[in-house]
Length: 165
Image 1 (tube, rainbow, N blue to C red):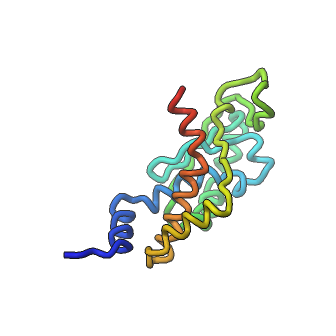
Image 2 (cartoon, one colour):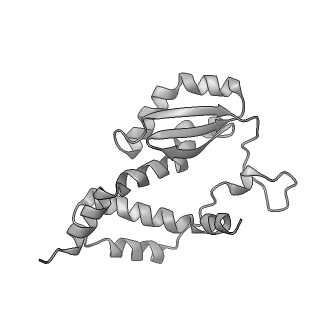
């Protein structure tokens, strides 16, 4: 029995829940776009597990404020990522600043050093990724696959750095 490659890829992506996992990982990356720059200065999405987005905030006042806006944030997230992707958001006050690190010689080190630093791919790398997905007939799965591979490649330096730590 012969199975076409696009059918096998589509089946695997669905079976392993890759499409949903990609969407959930993107929630972390689009946090600032969803909540705006002011809120992003005092908060950061740090993880998404089983549809629950975990967000660290500067203090309990901001945690309370964002809790009041939670439904709206979830709606905007799901509008962007797909219905049912984010089911809940949990806010945790940390007391830390969420300003982006200024440089590698900053005195204040710590969790901010692990902030995801995407390394933008060149247009030829993106074209190569898109070309590798041409056999996937379902446009939604093809798009999810391309976004997944791009995200994997853009965040590779962070994962390498974390694995060396």
